Image (cartoon, rainbow, N blue to C red; front, side):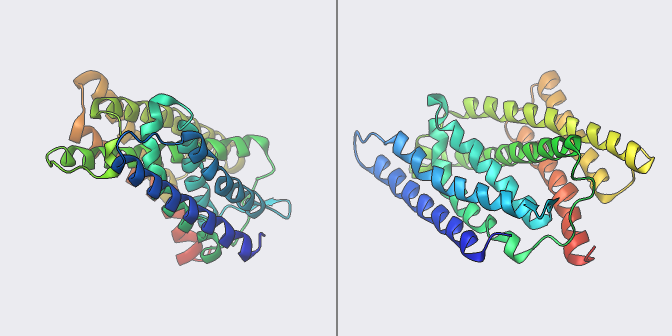
Amino acid sequence: MPSILTYLSASLLYGIAGWYFWRAMRTDTSAAGAVPNVRLQQYVMLLPLLVHGLVLYHAVFMDNVLSFGVGNAISAIVWLTAVIYWVSGFFSSLRGLQNLIAPLSAIAAVAVLIPLLLPSIHPLAHAGMTAFKAHLLAAMLAYSLFTIAALHAVLMTLLERRLHHSEVSPIFSQLPPLLVMEKMLFRLVWVGFILLSLTLLSGIVFSEELFGQSVPFTHKSLFGFISWGIFAALLAGRHLYGWRGRTAIRWMLAGFVALVLSYIGSKFVLEIILNR
């Protein structure tokens, strides 16, 4: 397991990166004609992402077993979310979203320390199977994309409210128009929905082969299928009835809450409350 100093170093680097992005964002919006140094901003975020990734790798793949408790799961989801946002900065059409790196860095600075507070107690069974690792990767990517979509939905809500005020916060000043952000939101939901479908399908296959029953009735499976149904209804409503705006955002956030209760919630109950 990585040392406490390594965890603290990753958290500190995120804090420095967040401070830099916040300062750069305020400078760019207050100085007339200021041009942000996008390449430098990308490199500033690279170091904490690398250190966090190394911390996660050594914490999860510990002593030739897969240790993936609730602390490591939260840390991994936040790390993947930050990586996806970081990569989006290389595309000119998405650079307005880089304003979100500052608050995301603050979240990551806390998330990287959570495994210290909530350490993994029991290694995952059947972790040596390549197919199981692919199943876990698809699940984490789905979580990360839906996390981004949820942040996106909250941001759209705040932006819509801010449009009714003359003074706009620096974090909203360079964002794409609401219609563009809405299209991006549904692209995230579509990709996340496909990954979630693969996760649930592969989970059914694993359950059938290992336990002799296709879908065991557990907290995890129940909320997993509830979240899948909510996202399916959202995409169907968008296609058939043109759902958008607040209606789409409410469905999106409801599906995300169910998804969080599915995996993180079940792990928290089992590992922290029941100590199993």
